[in-house]
Length: 514
Image (tube, one colour):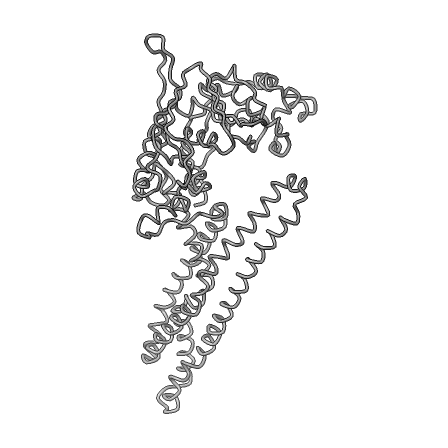
């Protein structure tokens, strides 16, 4: 189940949509105001905890509950026949007693359901903050921000402790009833059959048989009473998983509400993905502020066109872009065309929407109007503002996200391979060393390979924390040379009056903007 959940989470950029809240509360809050108060999916917090802890709890307790129920049914049938043959009136008494216990337990313990839901969320929030501090340890140390971070940790810990205290109170009330309920079991059967014993109509052994059968049947009928605390935690986990899977399905443009929550998306196809994305956003645009959504078209350019014209790699028509919450307009009526061999530089003040234009071109942001037409993913390369280093070797950093081959055995069963980033030509280790030299990182493999560049090329380190920011940026340019895209779209920091969005068409003549 974890494997299937990871496939759904990683398919068609679902992870990005949930993180940016594109399919959740950001647009949902606006849609709710314009949809007569209809409930919409809440923001999905801590997906990592839902994938690991909640799935594990669900599967483990489901198995335990199934075995318990089956055993109870077998035990119930066996001892019901025995008890009914001995004391029919005692059998009727046990039915009423079990119903009373179940109803009362459910009423008293109902407070545990929302408390356990909050417990999972608050503990996950605390773990997330601790991981965030670890990942940003150097920055926090430079700023000497321990007091501020400690204050936030203490605040989240206090919320966890407060929740635990409320759970303790609810569990105390529940335990008081269930303990008394269990002790009364020893009195009720004796009280029912005692008059017959004193009247001489039954023997003492019958009382012992009746008490034994009574205890067995009552235990079988009061599974909810005996495991209510575990059931409340199980119910909270189911609620979190259910909302998570619904949000995943809503965020995947290739799936519909008719698909099962655990059904894999359709086979990945770039053009079909774009068409499905545009179609899935139509309903949302009916009630969202700021109009509809951007139409994204992916078109593979022909090998040659007539009259010596150059292929169009990127084109926008009457493009309007708003933020995902549709509260701010960033771009209006933008028309641009970039042909093969051309370069385009876009400058503007911070917050003007340069990076947002990149997100719209890639299909990450869809709120707005107009059309964007570009080449498919295997012919375009996006460089975000912050350089990213994946887990793996230095060679893996250069190839990312491309690969020379794809073996289905390296992926979970049923995984959909897009094959959008298969390398056009094989790259040897010597070729990759030449690429590092081209981007002024020649010493990198020697440094981490103890003088052996091939060893350094295959060294596995935490490159995001090992390389400087400048080295990571140069490594990102090395990926361009390796992947050989026809269209390069990147955001570069320029420490002057403006930041610049630089769109380059050729990979051999791109410029370093420092």
